[in-house]
Image 1 (cartoon, rainbow, N blue to C red):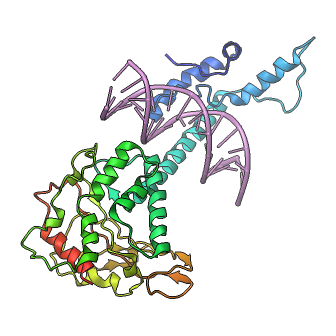
Image 2 (cartoon, rainbow, N blue to C red; image 1 turned 90 degrees about the vertical axis):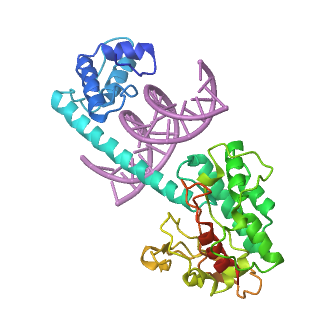
Image 3 (tube, helix red, strand yellow; image 1 turned 180 degrees about the vertical axis):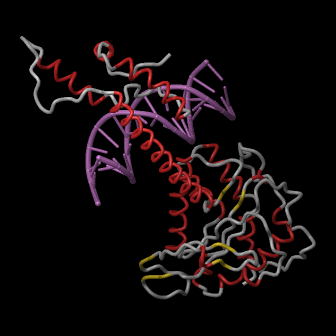
Length: 330
DNA sequence: TAGGCCATCTGGTCCT
DNA sequence: AGGACCAGATGGCCTA
């Protein structure tokens, strides 16, 4: 049964008294079949042109004969109705495409977030909140020129996020990289034996609630560079090229770059063709030795992700270790 | 079952 | 006139 969505019962009665309404209503069911979606809302779609005339008549009816003014309303003929429907279907398709584009952009944003999972996507609103926090946190790092403490970084990222998302982010960031880049400042990371799984990635309960969505191992963690001092070092972005670890075929997310993102080719070198290029301007940013007032960072920071849908046991830790050593052994 | 999230439809508004 | 954008409404799906 088709529903009428109108402002008032009176209006519904008024509209239903119109001769064209039956035809229009019957067409709604066809619409439903065509679009594969309920047409319950705006069931009078395409008939609003007629609403105006109806309301006009109502206003003019006080006292005597309704006077017709303004452009003469065309009767909703079958041809007009069909034209309207065609227009509406086209508009719906455009709107779908538009929303898909929006969702794609949101997906791209998810991929460059500190915590990314294909299996458990952040909601739209949480993605935007996390993005805001992420930008904020990175800005803080740039301004202070210091590395954020792991806990502080997590706290900044989780500000304003829902509890489940906070748990997810906190859990992801406590998986290992945090301790990794904190250790870096204490001592040079020893070159790990590629054959031996990296201890840094052995999951230890961080004392935080478990992520609500599956295992830790199901999420991608974007590793942070040890400090943003490295960003100012032009040689930093080349580390991944020197990495001699076996080529990893997993889903590397776009590596983060201050100046944009780049994609990695199969051999691990940056795919400049696919790189985004936008310059970030940071006025008077002090980066531990970096000079200048407006910094154009053209260096890139490689990001290495733990692939999703891969259990801890199956994950090639030695590759992670090699990659991390390449990053952090500066 | 309620609430959150999402995709879609829809009509209005603005712009080209 | 037609397209882009927007916000409201709706129903489906999923989870606690």
